[in-house]
Image (cartoon, rainbow, N blue to C red; front, top):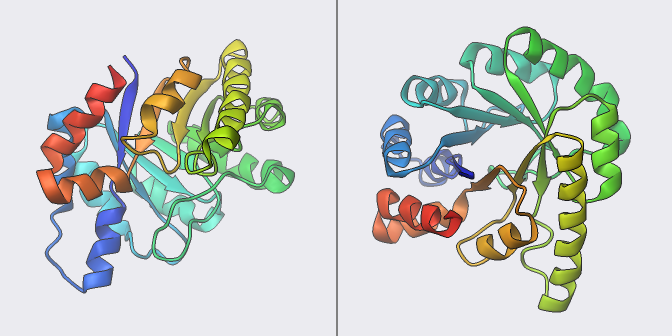
Length: 236
Protein backbone atom coordinates (compact mmCIF):
# COMPACT_ATOMS: atom_id res chain seq x y z
CA UNK A 1 0.00 0.00 0.00
CA UNK A 2 1.22 3.50 -0.84
CA UNK A 3 2.52 5.31 2.24
CA UNK A 4 1.14 8.61 3.50
CA UNK A 5 3.41 11.16 5.15
CA UNK A 6 1.69 14.02 6.95
CA UNK A 7 3.76 17.18 7.09
CA UNK A 8 3.15 18.94 10.41
CA UNK A 9 5.50 21.92 10.28
CA UNK A 10 2.49 24.13 9.64
CA UNK A 11 1.67 23.76 13.34
CA UNK A 12 4.87 25.43 14.59
CA UNK A 13 4.29 28.08 11.91
CA UNK A 14 0.87 28.75 13.43
CA UNK A 15 2.40 28.85 16.91
CA UNK A 16 4.85 31.52 15.82
CA UNK A 17 2.25 33.54 13.92
CA UNK A 18 -0.11 33.63 16.90
CA UNK A 19 2.57 33.82 19.63
CA UNK A 20 0.71 30.98 21.33
CA UNK A 21 2.47 28.37 23.48
CA UNK A 22 -0.53 26.02 23.25
CA UNK A 23 0.91 23.55 20.77
CA UNK A 24 0.85 19.87 21.72
CA UNK A 25 2.94 18.52 18.87
CA UNK A 26 3.16 15.06 20.41
CA UNK A 27 -0.64 14.82 20.51
CA UNK A 28 -0.87 15.86 16.85
CA UNK A 29 1.68 13.21 15.90
CA UNK A 30 -0.16 10.50 17.81
CA UNK A 31 -3.57 11.44 16.38
CA UNK A 32 -2.19 11.53 12.83
CA UNK A 33 -0.64 8.08 13.11
CA UNK A 34 -3.73 6.60 14.75
CA UNK A 35 -5.82 7.95 11.87
CA UNK A 36 -3.63 6.26 9.26
CA UNK A 37 -0.57 8.41 8.56
CA UNK A 38 2.44 6.16 8.02
CA UNK A 39 4.89 8.90 8.96
CA UNK A 40 4.96 12.52 10.08
CA UNK A 41 7.36 15.16 8.86
CA UNK A 42 8.84 18.38 10.20
CA UNK A 43 10.97 20.84 8.26
CA UNK A 44 13.87 22.82 9.71
CA UNK A 45 15.99 25.66 8.39
CA UNK A 46 19.24 27.18 9.63
CA UNK A 47 17.41 29.69 11.81
CA UNK A 48 15.51 26.85 13.52
CA UNK A 49 12.30 28.85 13.11
CA UNK A 50 9.45 28.11 13.28
CA UNK A 51 10.42 24.46 13.88
CA UNK A 52 12.86 24.22 16.77
CA UNK A 53 15.28 21.47 17.72
CA UNK A 54 13.07 20.65 20.71
CA UNK A 55 10.11 20.19 18.35
CA UNK A 56 12.08 17.54 16.49
CA UNK A 57 12.91 15.78 19.76
CA UNK A 58 9.29 15.95 20.92
CA UNK A 59 8.03 14.53 17.64
CA UNK A 60 10.67 11.78 17.78
CA UNK A 61 9.41 10.63 21.17
CA UNK A 62 5.84 10.43 19.90
CA UNK A 63 6.25 9.18 16.32
CA UNK A 64 6.60 5.66 15.06
CA UNK A 65 8.07 7.06 11.83
CA UNK A 66 9.56 10.55 11.77
CA UNK A 67 10.92 12.39 8.73
CA UNK A 68 12.99 15.55 8.93
CA UNK A 69 13.14 17.86 5.91
CA UNK A 70 16.15 20.17 5.74
CA UNK A 71 18.52 21.84 3.28
CA UNK A 72 21.82 19.94 2.94
CA UNK A 73 23.76 22.21 5.27
CA UNK A 74 26.42 20.87 7.59
CA UNK A 75 25.12 23.16 10.35
CA UNK A 76 21.83 21.26 10.49
CA UNK A 77 23.40 17.81 10.76
CA UNK A 78 23.51 18.16 14.54
CA UNK A 79 19.72 18.55 14.65
CA UNK A 80 19.28 15.46 12.50
CA UNK A 81 21.80 13.33 14.36
CA UNK A 82 20.41 14.29 17.77
CA UNK A 83 16.78 14.02 16.67
CA UNK A 84 17.30 10.57 15.10
CA UNK A 85 14.56 10.71 12.43
CA UNK A 86 13.95 7.61 10.36
CA UNK A 87 14.53 9.59 7.16
CA UNK A 88 16.07 12.94 6.32
CA UNK A 89 14.60 14.63 3.25
CA UNK A 90 17.10 16.99 1.64
CA UNK A 91 15.48 19.93 -0.13
CA UNK A 92 16.06 23.55 -1.02
CA UNK A 93 15.40 26.09 1.70
CA UNK A 94 11.69 26.79 2.15
CA UNK A 95 10.15 30.23 2.11
CA UNK A 96 10.36 32.36 5.22
CA UNK A 97 7.76 31.23 7.73
CA UNK A 98 8.09 27.53 6.96
CA UNK A 99 6.73 27.58 3.43
CA UNK A 100 7.05 24.58 1.12
CA UNK A 101 10.58 23.61 0.17
CA UNK A 102 11.52 23.19 -3.47
CA UNK A 103 13.81 20.81 -5.32
CA UNK A 104 17.55 20.90 -4.83
CA UNK A 105 19.56 22.85 -7.37
CA UNK A 106 20.97 20.15 -9.63
CA UNK A 107 24.03 22.17 -10.62
CA UNK A 108 25.31 22.60 -7.06
CA UNK A 109 23.80 19.51 -5.54
CA UNK A 110 26.57 16.94 -5.73
CA UNK A 111 29.17 18.91 -3.76
CA UNK A 112 26.68 19.90 -1.05
CA UNK A 113 25.00 16.52 -0.75
CA UNK A 114 27.93 14.12 -0.58
CA UNK A 115 29.21 14.89 2.95
CA UNK A 116 25.70 15.23 4.38
CA UNK A 117 24.49 11.96 2.86
CA UNK A 118 27.65 10.23 4.06
CA UNK A 119 27.18 11.47 7.64
CA UNK A 120 23.54 10.38 7.65
CA UNK A 121 24.42 6.97 6.25
CA UNK A 122 27.08 6.44 8.91
CA UNK A 123 24.42 7.20 11.53
CA UNK A 124 22.00 4.72 9.97
CA UNK A 125 19.59 7.40 8.74
CA UNK A 126 18.08 7.11 5.26
CA UNK A 127 18.57 10.15 3.00
CA UNK A 128 15.98 11.22 0.41
CA UNK A 129 16.56 14.00 -2.14
CA UNK A 130 13.80 16.30 -3.41
CA UNK A 131 14.31 16.79 -7.14
CA UNK A 132 12.63 18.46 -10.07
CA UNK A 133 10.23 16.18 -12.01
CA UNK A 134 12.32 15.57 -15.10
CA UNK A 135 14.55 12.89 -16.60
CA UNK A 136 17.83 14.79 -16.23
CA UNK A 137 17.28 15.27 -12.50
CA UNK A 138 16.71 11.54 -12.08
CA UNK A 139 19.86 10.67 -14.02
CA UNK A 140 21.92 13.16 -12.04
CA UNK A 141 20.63 11.93 -8.69
CA UNK A 142 21.27 8.31 -9.65
CA UNK A 143 24.80 9.20 -10.69
CA UNK A 144 25.35 10.80 -7.30
CA UNK A 145 24.41 7.55 -5.57
CA UNK A 146 21.14 8.79 -4.07
CA UNK A 147 18.83 5.84 -3.49
CA UNK A 148 15.49 7.56 -2.86
CA UNK A 149 13.87 10.52 -4.61
CA UNK A 150 10.92 12.73 -3.84
CA UNK A 151 9.58 14.46 -6.94
CA UNK A 152 8.52 18.04 -6.35
CA UNK A 153 4.94 18.58 -7.54
CA UNK A 154 4.44 22.13 -6.25
CA UNK A 155 5.05 23.70 -9.67
CA UNK A 156 2.50 21.39 -11.35
CA UNK A 157 -0.67 21.14 -9.30
CA UNK A 158 -1.99 24.68 -9.82
CA UNK A 159 -1.29 24.99 -13.54
CA UNK A 160 -4.19 25.39 -16.03
CA UNK A 161 -5.46 22.01 -17.15
CA UNK A 162 -3.73 21.89 -20.56
CA UNK A 163 -0.36 22.91 -19.13
CA UNK A 164 -0.82 20.66 -16.12
CA UNK A 165 -1.34 17.56 -18.24
CA UNK A 166 1.88 18.16 -20.13
CA UNK A 167 3.80 18.51 -16.85
CA UNK A 168 2.12 15.42 -15.40
CA UNK A 169 3.26 13.47 -18.45
CA UNK A 170 6.80 14.69 -17.88
CA UNK A 171 6.57 13.74 -14.22
CA UNK A 172 5.28 10.28 -15.17
CA UNK A 173 8.26 9.75 -17.49
CA UNK A 174 10.68 10.74 -14.70
CA UNK A 175 8.99 8.41 -12.20
CA UNK A 176 9.12 5.50 -14.66
CA UNK A 177 12.84 6.05 -15.14
CA UNK A 178 13.39 6.14 -11.37
CA UNK A 179 11.46 2.90 -11.05
CA UNK A 180 13.61 1.22 -13.71
CA UNK A 181 16.69 2.34 -11.77
CA UNK A 182 15.21 0.80 -8.60
CA UNK A 183 15.13 4.09 -6.72
CA UNK A 184 12.69 4.88 -3.94
CA UNK A 185 9.95 7.17 -5.27
CA UNK A 186 7.85 9.77 -3.47
CA UNK A 187 5.69 12.73 -4.45
CA UNK A 188 5.33 15.97 -2.52
CA UNK A 189 4.77 19.68 -2.85
CA UNK A 190 1.42 21.47 -2.84
CA UNK A 191 -0.60 18.24 -2.95
CA UNK A 192 -4.22 18.58 -1.88
CA UNK A 193 -7.36 16.46 -1.68
CA UNK A 194 -8.26 17.68 -5.17
CA UNK A 195 -4.91 17.20 -6.87
CA UNK A 196 -3.79 13.97 -5.19
CA UNK A 197 -5.80 11.47 -7.31
CA UNK A 198 -4.70 13.10 -10.57
CA UNK A 199 -1.02 13.07 -9.62
CA UNK A 200 -1.14 9.47 -8.40
CA UNK A 201 -2.83 8.38 -11.62
CA UNK A 202 0.09 9.83 -13.56
CA UNK A 203 2.63 8.11 -11.26
CA UNK A 204 1.33 4.68 -10.18
CA UNK A 205 4.86 3.60 -9.21
CA UNK A 206 5.04 6.21 -6.41
CA UNK A 207 5.64 4.56 -3.05
CA UNK A 208 4.72 7.49 -0.81
CA UNK A 209 3.03 10.88 -0.95
CA UNK A 210 3.41 13.90 1.30
CA UNK A 211 0.53 16.20 2.19
CA UNK A 212 0.80 19.10 4.61
CA UNK A 213 -1.11 22.35 4.60
CA UNK A 214 -4.18 20.99 2.81
CA UNK A 215 -4.60 18.38 5.53
CA UNK A 216 -4.04 20.85 8.36
CA UNK A 217 -6.53 23.27 6.82
CA UNK A 218 -9.16 20.53 6.68
CA UNK A 219 -8.29 19.46 10.22
CA UNK A 220 -9.32 22.92 11.45
CA UNK A 221 -12.87 22.10 10.28
CA UNK A 222 -13.23 18.35 10.84
CA UNK A 223 -10.36 17.38 13.14
CA UNK A 224 -7.06 15.70 12.35
CA UNK A 225 -8.53 12.19 12.55
CA UNK A 226 -11.12 12.81 9.81
CA UNK A 227 -8.68 14.83 7.70
CA UNK A 228 -6.14 11.99 7.62
CA UNK A 229 -8.78 9.32 7.02
CA UNK A 230 -10.08 11.29 4.04
CA UNK A 231 -6.55 11.33 2.63
CA UNK A 232 -6.19 7.59 3.10
CA UNK A 233 -9.37 7.05 1.11
CA UNK A 234 -7.84 8.90 -1.82
CA UNK A 235 -4.83 6.62 -1.69
CA UNK A 236 -6.85 3.41 -1.77
